[in-house]
Image (cartoon, rainbow, N blue to C red):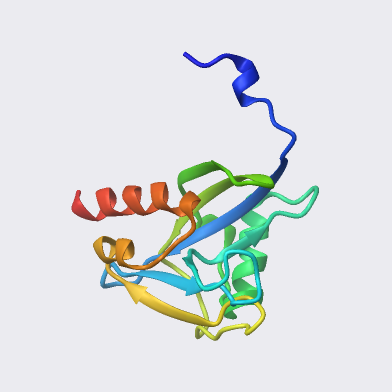
Length: 146
C-alpha cells in the first residue's frame, strides 16, 4: 500500500473534459493534435480545458462548438469514465462523456486539430494517443463488446 505522501505532488492539476462522439455505426471520433502543441501529432478525444468556475459539461459543450462546429446540449452528455494521469509537469484529470446526439456538420478548427477520423472502438489502439487516453480506450472497447 502506498502512503499519502506518494500522492503529494508539486504538479499543477489540469482539468480537461473530453467526448467520445459515437456515430450510428458505433465508431468513435478522434482528432489529431497539431504538431506545434504539447503531445503534438497524437490522437485524442475532442474536448479541452475547463476554465476556472466552469462546469466540465459546459466546458465540453463550448469546446465541441469551437473545435468541431457542433452544437451539443448538456443533457446529451452521458458521463462515462475518467482518467487521472501524472505527466512530468502536470497532473491531468479528464472526465469522458459519451455523446450520440449533436447538431451541425463537423468541421475542424485548425488551431485545435490537424485531422480527424472515425474509428471502430477496437481500432483505437492502432492510433498513437496520450497515455491518459488509454484507460478510456479500454473502457470504450469494453462498452462496444457488451
